[in-house]
Length: 288
Image (cartoon, rainbow, N blue to C red; front, side):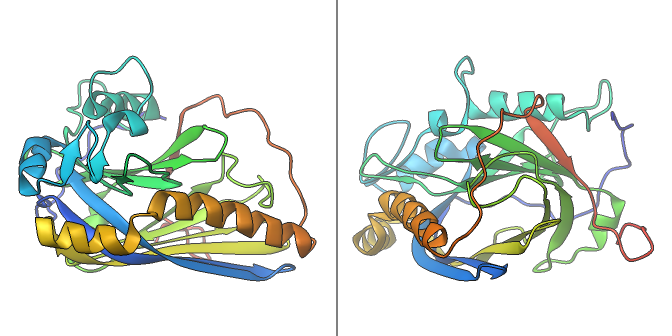
């Protein structure tokens, strides 16, 4: 469904500087098969319009070329696009959430796991999309699986989100439309809770539905200035982040299989590359 242009939002401007985050990912599965996994990670917040600034902040960080730590736009976009901004704009257009002639947000910041020694794997990357006045307009979740596939979930901020104060969470939900694990059924729903990254980066995603188990994945991290000292410190502790995530995913799958979790075959990709999210409903069916 295509929306008409809403009145401008009146959020506090979101114009972050490039920075690092030292944090932890936790997966907690409850229900028929219970399981818990946690691991430390190093993350990057990069405003795409400040790529050159970021590359100057540390001699050990680069954009689109090898370094101890690096960010590569190609990790987050399909072939045929020159820049990640172009790719994100294309996905926003495909979502049907912007009216004809409505300007698309072009000031985009990404929260992701950077490459370390040339390697990264991002089960989820989050793109915060702002207008020219740095007002948050949309949040795009880019979800990837270990089969080399990805899908996007888009939340378009509305007038109610203007009441979300700094440090509070945006909440939204939607149907699961993408295969991420053989031990999670496709018949499910995601509930998202996320704050705009600042001194801390925090989000939580819960999957539930008509299945015997639910899964909550959370990320919480503390901000670090992007500098030589902080990058080397984070790299020294977490240089194996990309490999750690992949190993953790496969070890978790093995443990779930040994615990007797049901196995679900991989279905075809959804026909649409972007699924839309909306404000969660209360018990009366009214958006909260």
